[in-house]
Length: 497
Image 1: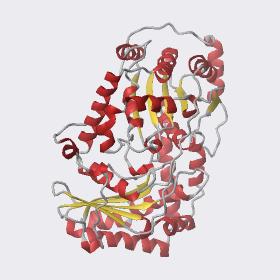
Image 2: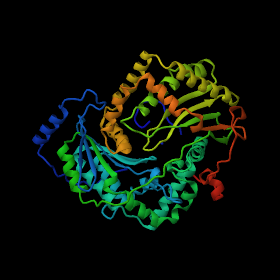
Image 3: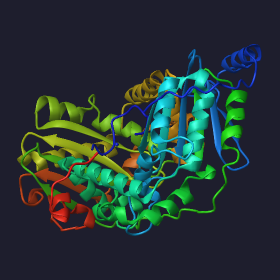
Image 4: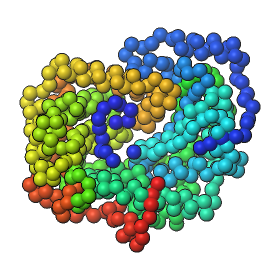
């Protein structure tokens, strides 16, 4: 659920030594005055984030976000690119958003890979990156006295990344190794099958890693990689977030200095909408080496911080599937039918899935557990939820999250999630304001709207060759190129990142 502190989605998501002298944008006295002013501004009572979010859009489209925070000597530096697996719309070239997460550490003419690592080490910073379906994030947290160095080296690699065809092929091989390693997990295998079954047109049908056939062919796509970089590593796709012992003027001045000459692009990503699902879909993995597993995946909504649907689903997941729910008590604690029960929806830019997951002691209990889940949903439709319980759950969800954003990295990471979804970090405050508005009627509304068998994809793992007939499964072979085992496609075993 991004940074929302609830149970949720489908289970299965360097550096330093060239010292640069820092140019101070203001003397220490004026810096302290601005810092004190920012930290002492009146708090918005309804805001989940009790610190002012300052935004400045540069002329080239880059959004610069600053949150002054009382963390003496420390600052978090995040760069969010609103490009992920969903933007891989062309056939045969999936996986490139994740690929560039690797390539961005390859160096430039100005700073080699080794020099970049040495500079980071000198700043005391730790750096990493990660990719999802909707975005790629690069992040570091380090000594604020080296903030200008952070700006310089990050701007340099995003604007001036340079790699040879040999370097490209080397990294493509590493990505294939990562794919193979991940695909050794049965949970990853069923996830790949599930996504390519639940989605038939939208790019959420492939995971962040991409389709296997595309990963195998990636070493032949050097020219396309240059095109991908030219399309998406542009200022209009990017947001720089700085949180910590900084001032707004300091950050904006450095952003203008190092990112201001970055040229805008013209590419617009157009993602095909998913057609309405009209019947239950099934996918099964035969595996007797792990506990039996079942996931009920319903089509859910896209993230929208101005609508009640996603907050209502978050609250509903706590009511029906959390450790305090009657269903959890019955199936996990009392009857011991399942090892685990959980449910929730992950936030995403386009409509995605609400998943209910269970892990079993005995696969024969799948029909009983599926029926118990269905009964719990039906009972909720009829009886709703106690008002006091609803109030307590909403309060718990809100304040567990509020307690977690207590340092620069946690704040920057949370803001990055909402930049990913909307482009606007203020979405974090709008979303959590919606939680206070969720009513029992809203919960019943989302149950009726989203918990329908016509929008359901059931995924199972068990020793059986096919999905349980007692569940009504009519196992269909929804074969997709991504479902082929890596060793079958390559005739050899390999490892993956």
